[in-house]
Image 1 (tube, helix red, strand yellow):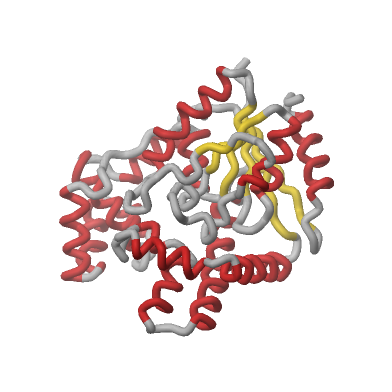
Image 2 (cartoon, rainbow, N blue to C red):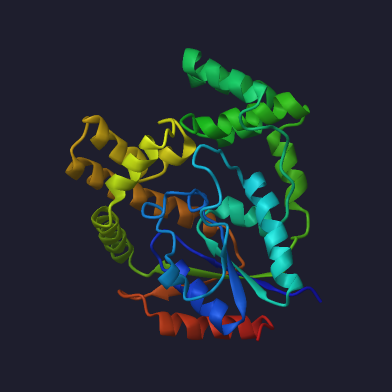
Length: 314
């Protein structure tokens, strides 16, 4: 029987990193990060990437492996992460995927193929140029003609996914809706046990997020953003669109005060946590552990142990 892998998921600031380390130490595992921003080098503070002390000697993979100028997709992440998972299994260890980027987790665990299209390719560039010239209206109308289902599903403000749907249709002749329907029925690549973390009271989550942003600022987030710019990283790089970096760029530009930028980071972080939960709650396999006011990791480890034992992991 295929060895099970463990997935620790949840919204930002919920304690995934800590629980992942505790589980890795208990189950002789190694952590594979599934965070779309922790993959970038030089972005430790703003992405809350684990420090050496926080790793507690547990091997961590897919952290600080990419140049911030690069653009990574779920497909590219899967291509890099799957061989790592396979290697961990081959060495008799337990892979523990930890992160809140739901699409990236699904790309590895479910193993669904990705529709054609190349970020940065000719079709993508043409569509982006049209977006800049014409706005989203004509592009959304084109999508309605090619893929009415996708056009109905996507919000007009979701320009990224609208362009992606058009790109897939242009390059493959197949709608992204058809592709998604075909892949949804495929069996998963890995037998995974999903453990989720979230707060019982949303107000407690918001308070924790706000405190974490304050700590990031105290740790030197503004200097980290400044260093990325001084390294020659373009301002429109995907990495600099991450929450925390985009807002503090305005401080360096003189278009916002530090207080205004910090408030915006907190707001966007809370909004992001809400979107993460919306994505993750669609997964019926996740067994949720609920925090009550404070994060009790001893309790979370005990509950996780019970969940894993019931799934045959010992």
